[in-house]
Length: 435
Ligand code: PMP
Image 1 (cartoon, protein in one colour):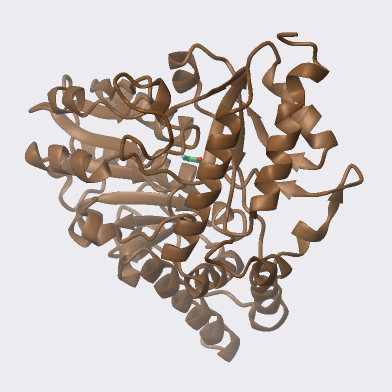
Image 2 (cartoon, rainbow, N blue to C red):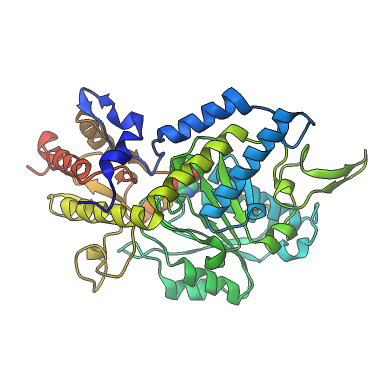
């Protein structure tokens, strides 16, 4: 039995009651995007129905109300990650947040619009460190920034068991390191990276830290200021919220010293035909009209998660992860990515190495293409993700081009996991693999 009242929780998510291919839906693709509770859908509809107006503008009553709802939403979402409202910048998602950071640092590097740009200036031979576990969203912006500035991109490798090699990390992060960018939880391995250790290594050399919290924010209690990270991003649609909204958290001194990326309306104080003065954070980074109804609905999403309680969410999903991992290991021909039992000198069973996980496993089925596995499961109502999950280097590291990924969220049940496992156990026989 779960620590959560799953019948009540599931009743809040209308889509979970749907059928797919004549089967009850078993939704195990929350790593790609989560389902939304009625409270989130209602919050967006209510705003558009009764409160819609342009925020931070106009003297009329409705504009003041909309502004209040918008700024209340900022406080709620900031509070969800332990932050102050002015430390939260709205973005359209994690990808936008990471590009914002990389471009802003690039602007600082060429001396554009920077209050204290020296801190971020990158030049020939400076180093940006990432990990081998990154989603392309936390890889390609750094490749581009390195190309623009002459900086060198280096990486921390992942071991066979999916953990980062911290000894190598300690040698890769050095005097030339200016930025260390890493994911909190890999969207392929489900492993919670040792981010405290990475931040400590980066701080020793004065490097800026950037964390991708896409796959942790919906699943773990998060206190970004306590973690000591400089900048972090997350996506609303993966945490029960709507599309086209996300957050960029920044330490106050870091945001204050960072120049803008996008420029235009709503981010300025005084503008002449020659130059402009910029507002302080977070508005400095919010040029143009913001995703207001989405922000209000994302606040409803974090209120929903907080009402359930993030420690309980984590405990529930951890139990699902263990059931899933044990079940998959017992099916012949399945190879889990980032399995502790494949590490050197470790014992079997998840958690055996002290590795913390979220409810997510990616795996390879010997002799059957991931896309065929996905279709086979879909015919049985089970929704999973197949492909490289925007992490090609990591798949290459494990000798694969694609994998199957099952990812759970607060609303999944043990029965979901069992239906999924039952379906997976029939895959190889169906495709005549390993017979
Ligand atoms: N980072 C990670 C770890 C992700 O899982 C994702 C989404 N798959 C992203 C970044 C990108 O998020 P978005 O597409 O919402 O910008």
